[in-house]
Image 1 (cartoon, rainbow, N blue to C red):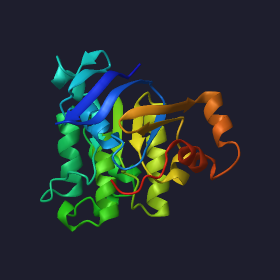
Image 2 (image 1 turned 45 degrees about the vertical axis):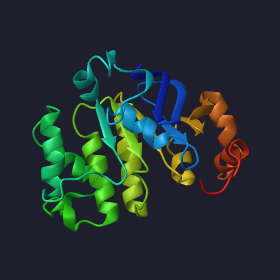
Image 3 (image 1 turned 30 degrees about the vertical axis):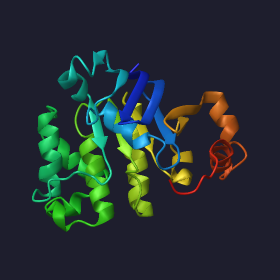
Length: 241
């Protein structure tokens, strides 16, 4: 088991953003997190990454409790937030290289990861000059580079052209096949259907569905719109909040 959340609760004043969430993430799986805006997805990802302090519950990454051993737990996590937090005056390779060095990655790991994601040609460009899609991919490269065991992606596949999306999917699958767990939020259901091993759905801070294995295969069997239909059946459209 790569990570375990137990009764995770996050409050902002009187508002409960995450309400008693419990789930486990296993090596080799790509988990899609669905839910409407405000469901608690981004807050959950940020909490696992150590960027948000939980109000209650526990987060354990490869046996390290985030509350009592934060540095050891966070060292195993790669996080691509939204929008990606890049050092704008670094080049793309310098940014990913900085992260790689901090994680103790092998020499050349940054360049190799950028190449996998189709970014070799822009490696020497400052991050401040990059388009939205390129920034997304640099953020993804930084999340994946080095000995990462848990990859957290917050809408990171948004804004990618078809070639970039294909490279991103292949790189994520390779990371999972190498033993990492990937937890990603996205509204791009078509992309997710081709990639995910498991689907979890959040609403109002709670986990309302968890499908994997045979259950997931049966869910997706009807065709391309099956995941959307499943999601809509669970989440009522309540309009802007």
